[in-house]
Image (cartoon, rainbow over all chains, first blue to last red; front, side):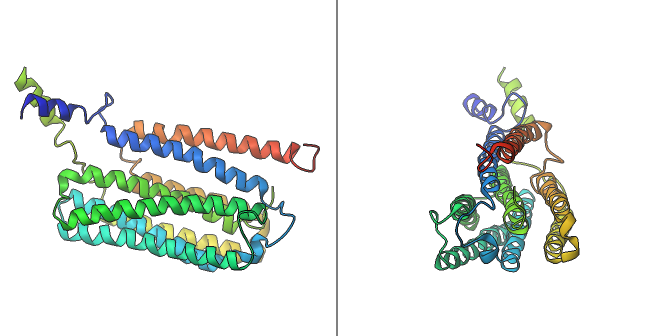
Length: 202
Length: 114
């Protein structure tokens, strides 16, 4: 190994001994906690203060969203199995799990599209009432994050199909996985706050 | 000098490689628990007899699911504590700000002279 290559490899690690890219992703996830924290807080303080309908209880369907929540949870399982397959050099399973993860993410997004369309046809919009404003901004930003994750994972899947995703690239998959699990964990909170606690007011 | 540098780099193994954190069996087990907890949440929502204690139960179940995902799927249980601090710090700040805003809104918000 040349001195230049060795120096480049040294830059992959921070002074903590941890990979720079992984540190960066965790720092980003920390900032995302604060971002979603503000949106969730805004939703909570305005919850139950609508002067006109439609109201959450008229629109939110817990059975429907429970199914899409389950789908997103299972996509997280596919993600860790994909990482495990990459780390163990199992090319076939890497491809299978790296396809199933964004596929389940797309099903979740499809559910969100159906839900948003139904709400819009029922008269809810961003400017209709406080519920519309806070609900669409919060779940819309989450959906945008899922979309970014789906695109990212599909690019990794294409790389695996081309045979360019071996064990030496497992950190790349792990970092994408951290993002995907964070998106999942945000939904764990949103599912409870928006759908299951819809009758609780501040 | 060059030999010493090569030694350092080889200790770090290959830059883009990461080792398996735990077994696939553990991952599947955690996913099964997550599915059961989600089913419990939905059950609590639909049971009228649990209405008075619904909020604390739902918050506990949510926290359990949150913890399982970050500890096992995001590997905080197995990884360096540096990552735990990078995550927990901003999470605590977000939680504290959220709590402060909610308390302020309840006491001084719309309809209460605010």
